[in-house]
Amino acid sequence: MQKNIFLHFSRELVDQPIMSTLIRKYDVEVNILQATITPNEEGTMFVQLRGNEEKLEHALGYLVANGVDVMVKPRRIHFHEDLCTSCGACVAHCLPGALYVEEDTRKVLYDEDLCIACELCIPACPFRAVEMAKTSVGGEV
Ligand code: SF4
Ligand code: SF4
Image (cartoon, rainbow, N blue to C red; front, side, top):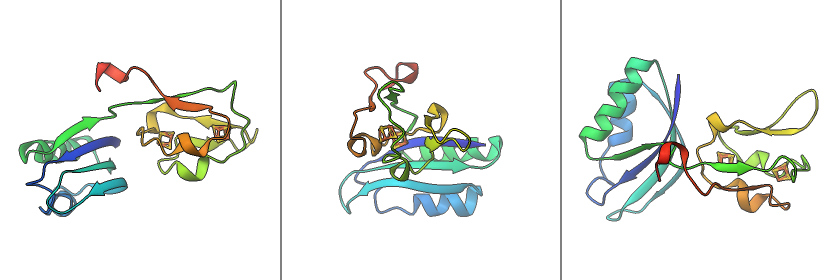
């Protein structure tokens, strides 16, 4: 099972070994896709957590109990299939593989379930085929 989550660390938490504890004690696989953390300042991370459902639940509980703001897929993008030329320029920027080349057709497709809304594909697309959605999934911001 996999969860794509957005984490926000307060200034007090930035220097804490929270991610290493998550891996060691909660036995989940952590893939950090994007991080902006400066010592003594706030930090944000887009991460993929992998493990069975129980382990993921415990891991998320640990984060919340330690004061980390956890948002599961806080935003999403719009993929405009009609504007996409399948040029592939975005694919290498999409670390979770939400934008990918379909083997048979060589068309670029979008899998919303994998998208963590990191926005890296937006400047990469010369045809404006991807943009941030105006509303978010489940009403979250
Ligand atoms: S925002 Fe774009 S680059 Fe980021 S995960 Fe979603 S599709 Fe991939
Ligand atoms: S960069 Fe834009 S046009 Fe090219 S494949 Fe990606 S979404 Fe489609």
